[in-house]
Amino acid sequence: MSVIRKILKTCFRLLQKRKVRKKEKARTTLEKYGADFKKAVKFVLQKEGGYVNHPADPGGETKYGISKRAYPDLNIKDLTVEQAKEIYYRDYWLKAGCDEMDWPMSLVVFDTAVNMGVSRAKVFYRESRNWVDYVRLRLGRFAALAKDRNARIFLRGWVRRIVDLMTVALEDKDGLS
Image 1 (cartoon, rainbow, N blue to C red):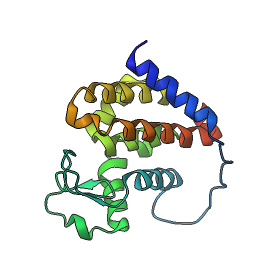
Image 2: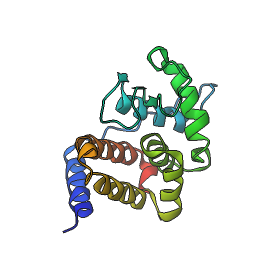
Image 3: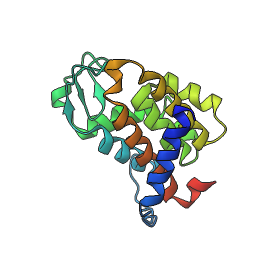
Image 4: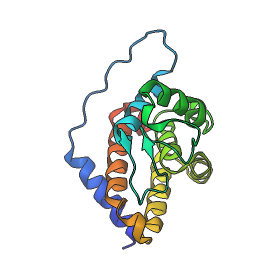
């Protein structure tokens, strides 16, 4: 059994154990971002957390998932959540084309753009038939990265993130189509 198949099996087993919450009714307020971006950025911010400067992370100094490597002129330590949302919307959501996608594909592509870069997110999108197929490609990339000793320490977190991503995608009835 391939590594990807084992990881997928584990992901689906964990998903079955979780209680899926009922879909929250969308609020109809006139705000800057659409409902899908708000749900997606909430997920990403929960996964990325606050300030981190892990020596094995190729992104280096990071806050809310925004890295010093990607934004060398930005004061990462003083970055606010609102600034991070602006960056995510402009440089990830729009550039990856998520504004043109249906949910949950938009969530999966956006999270991949943040985690692996916009170009890789677009490649996976072109190569996938649906969001589950897309997740399979992402898991394959994680399996390949796990061969590197420095990257291996992040594998468990990456797999948990995929399980959480699939949970959010499946919470929405529209995500099943």
